[in-house]
Image (cartoon, rainbow, N blue to C red; front, top):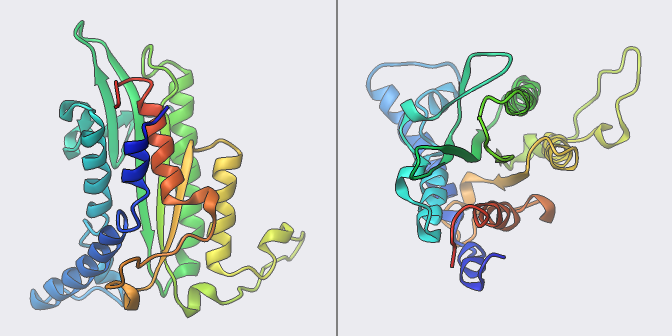
Length: 255
């Protein structure tokens, strides 16, 4: 069981708000930096090609793990330490990995985390790529696990966090292309927000991921105390972090 102290820690409303604020500020600063250097990416691409805009989510989760008592050496933070073997490809670099190191030299894969975001206006150009990517990465990891890539490690906790821009275009109903067969009812004329919602929900229900966190945010609200929304309690940040902590409790003495 996760202690009451930890539950109070991860239920704070501002726990993810500062990460969302950093996301918007970092994207804006990257666009300004590229413009100052004379680098011109088409459209809003200059805000995304600099990377690092999801770093604050990573730092917050890492700090929470440290506060729980997970040894710093077990939390992989350096780029060179974030690769795990795949089955259909040689390796994939994840965003955060927890590896428990035992005194006898044995290693156990405890947790794996992927962080993604999407800002408009090109929602339609990216949603299928995002879905294929998240499904493929999970299937590759679970197949590698089944085939013994992680030695005697028990089943790891696999988490996926997605931050999507909440705006008029992402909320607008999208026409379906059905030249031969109809799409499933939940996708009929669904907005991009709802399409992502259904995808994230199914990733959990089909046990593709242990937990998924789905957040919506608008840049205009970034300075508000709580600057994001959660369209589904099943995909909330609290449930996501609580689940991760519960899993880690099986490996570490969390008070």
